[in-house]
Length: 310
Ligand code: SIN
Image (cartoon, rainbow, N blue to C red; front, top):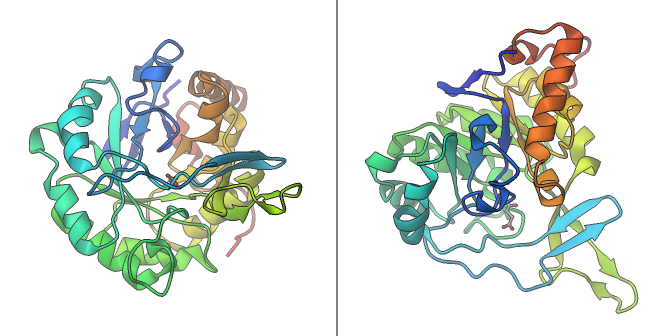
């Protein structure tokens, strides 16, 4: 079975990647369970210019319909990341995609310039969409809620980086295709969608919100149909490679995202439940391809039969 896919000019051994923030810092918690060479790519936890403490606890709550998190991008900052973590990550036998976020164009430019050429990641995922932080002075809370801000942020990243830029988009918008168009116009080589859906969990006993930061982002299988629609909408209206994210827990979920138009996918919440989720999902996906008589995984992208969504 040929699982190889090409996206943003890079060949990945497998279309199934692991999503930012769900795979430890260097995946070390998973090494007894997974052969990293079988993982399409590891997307790192988002790094910011300066260290961040993250949001007040509680930061995570399991709701009846998914995981709600308000982590708030805790990390040690880009200097520590490029000196301690990135050199180790680059030794791993898979593609490394570094996730970065910033509140200004200057932040993004400075961060990218700090990445040494000899340990350049395979790509950068520009996180324009974390629902748990404010992305600078904009009338919108998140950069990826504003097409103009998205365009400017992607443009500076593309102009500075020596590797492809994947713009990670939020579903918390009226029309995600407008944002994907802005990312494409600015030169993004791909978009990843979707980040989490903003939500609130309530502790009725205490009559207060559960999360320290009140609002969090919902992930897990509950959001999969919503994420599939976002992928299909973007596939139908913007000519840009898509990395699908949202509630993938089985091989058939991967097939659904690819049929809707994703060239690759990211597994997120499932890693937090099941440390060998990636291995199991890959095997199930291969089984699906065999059953359907499909020899190349890449042949599935966009092959959904029937009507348009947007
Ligand atoms: C977080 O750290 O709050 C989650 C990251 C994200 O949603 O982008």
